[in-house]
Image (tube, rainbow over all chains, first blue to last red; front, side):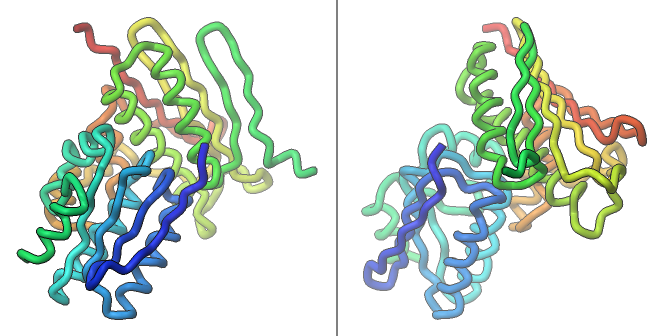
Length: 116
Length: 159
C-alpha cells in the first residue's frame, strides 16, 4: 500500500496538483492544507491530476467541494482530470460529477478554464 | 514494543477476523483486506469499489465519532479498537465492524441522499448515506456488553 503524496506545479494561472495514492480521512488533511494555502495566496484556479489516485473517500470529496465552492465565489474553480474509470464510476453514481467538472486530459481541462 | 499497535489476523474457513487500533492510519489496511476478500467472492470491480467505500466510511465514522475525544466510550479502560469480521460466502460478503465507543442512534438518522447533498455542495455528512446507497444491508446494533456493531452485507448479483 503506497503512501498518499501530492505534487504541486504552477502552469500559468493554474495550480496543477498531482495526487498519488489513497485520499481518505488519514491523508486528506494534506490536500486540505494545500488547498487552504492556495486560497490564502489568492490562487483560485486549481486542476487536480487524478491519474495515480487509488481511492477517494467522502472526506476527500468534501474537501474538493468546499474549495470549489469558495473558489467559484472568487471567479475560480477546482476541476479534475485523468480520473481512473473505477473512481469516476463511483463519484458519478454519488452525484459528484454534477458539481465538480471532470476532464479527460490536461488539454481539455486547461481549455475549459479559458472558457469559464 | 507497543503491542496495542499490532494488527492481529485470525483466519477460519469462511471468515477473517482482524483487530486494528481505532486510528485513521489503519483505514488503508482495512480497505485492502476487504477488497481482497470481495475479489475472492467474485464481485465485479464496480461492486468491490462500492464495498471499499462503504467500509471505509463506516470505519472513519467509528474513529471520528464513536471514539471522538469528547465521546462517552463504553469501556473507558480500553484503547480505541475496531474489531472486524469479514465473512465470505458463495454469494455474499458480510462485514461486521465492532467498537466500544459512543452509541449512535443509527436507525433514527436519515440524512438526505448522497446525490442531494452533493448537489447542495455539502462538505461532509456523507458516510451513512453512502453505506446505505452502496450496500444491500446496513444494520447497527448496540449493547453495553457487546459494544456497537455495524453489519454491512453485499450480495453477489447473478448475471
